[in-house]
Structure formats: structure tokens, C-alpha cells
Length: 95
Image 1 (cartoon, rainbow, N blue to C red):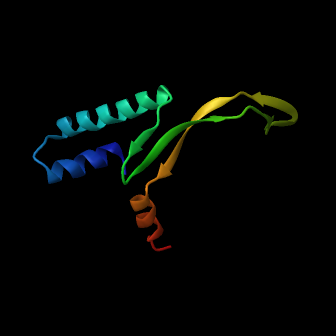
Image 2 (image 1 turned 30 degrees about the horizontal axis):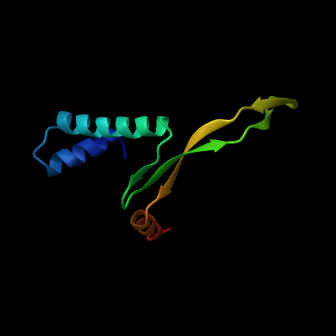
Image 3 (image 1 turned 180 degrees about the vertical axis):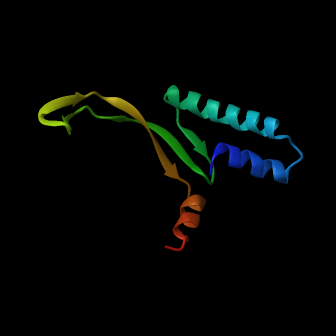
């Protein structure tokens, strides 16, 4: 599902225009990204938790030249832990 699909589905179920819905969704995503950029945790009940975690520095290999070591520096990454309701609904999917 894309952001456009999400906007269209919400517009069909509400009286809001697609532009209004897109503005709300984009502002929400901007606030989530901003909070993560400041190192905050974002918790959305029944959905999940976004957390910033440091990934340790390590040595990698260049696939085109395996003899050469490449230093990969410490960096922060975003981790997502799904909430209980989401986890339960996904595990019920037929394989």
C-alpha cells in the first residue's frame, strides 16, 4: 500500500478531500520523522513502536575486491517493534 492508496481509501470513507487527508498524513509522518531525528521514541498504541538504535562500527568487505577491508562507521538506525494487535493479525495470515 502506498501513501496515495491510503489517501484514496480514507477519502472514500470520509467527507474530507484527498488534499486535506494528504496534508494530515504528511504532517503526521513529518512529526514522526522529526521525533526520531531527535532520538525520541514514537509509540503508536496497537500499532507499534519506532526507536532509534545505534549500530556498531564494523569492518565490511568490498564485493568487487574482497581483499580490501572497508570501515563502516557507527550509525543510528530506526527499529520498529509491532504492537500486539498488529503482530496477531499478521500471524493469522495464511501462508
